[in-house]
Length: 248
Ligand code: IPE
Ligand code: IPE
Ligand code: MG
Image (cartoon, rainbow, N blue to C red; front, side, top):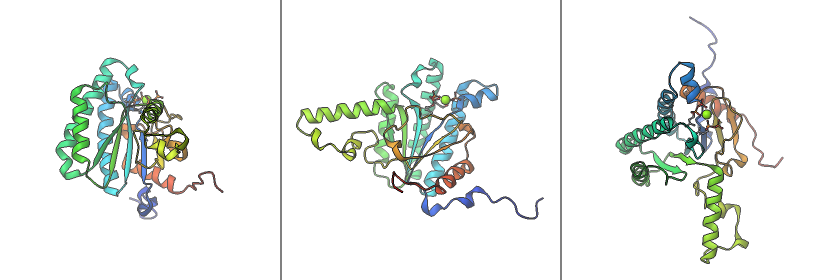
């Protein structure tokens, strides 16, 4: 047993009084996690869903204002039907559970993405989750579902064009702030920190507009293995940086 100088826990390196306001996570690596264990990819998604539950609850507990997670991209439909089906049934399971615990957890849930291709049952569950939690204050969890950054921008442009056609908008007075209001994330501040698990160095169509000045933290840890400790590491790294926003 070590008597002296145990390496300080990463938790001690986090200043909880100045957390980022908004953390976004690209939860990648479920498939690799399963492969490493000789399991089907779907087992990786089940493990990943558990990690999401743990991390979302923890973010609420430490007082984070916004957590946005990439759960299913508009490109993920390219995957085998069985895998997509598993992801959708995990989502259903999670939403049913979230609804039953809502009164206790008081987490506000939002969904970013085009929900129209989901089954009516899933859409209804998303709507119910959103409705029940609408008035909760505290942590807001945004689940990106059938989300694509480019798709979001095209939809925003269309919505703005429609408003202009109806005389409710004027191209000459369009500002970045007004345009942001047309995005799924309207009203939510941009993510301060974007975490990507599993080591890939790309955005994969995530929050293209909102990521303009986000800090990035990329870890080789696979999403199902991501822990509170890893989150502390990401936040500590974020807190050690100087954000300049183009200034000096
Ligand atoms: C992320 O894990 C989950 C989704 C994209 C739905 P992956 O399934 O992409 O895992 P890898 O990248 O194949 O390891
Ligand atoms: C990004 O991961 C999407 C989600 C985590 C939901 P992908 O695994 O789909 O990204 P690529 O294909 O490696 O770029
Ligand atoms: Mg992946």
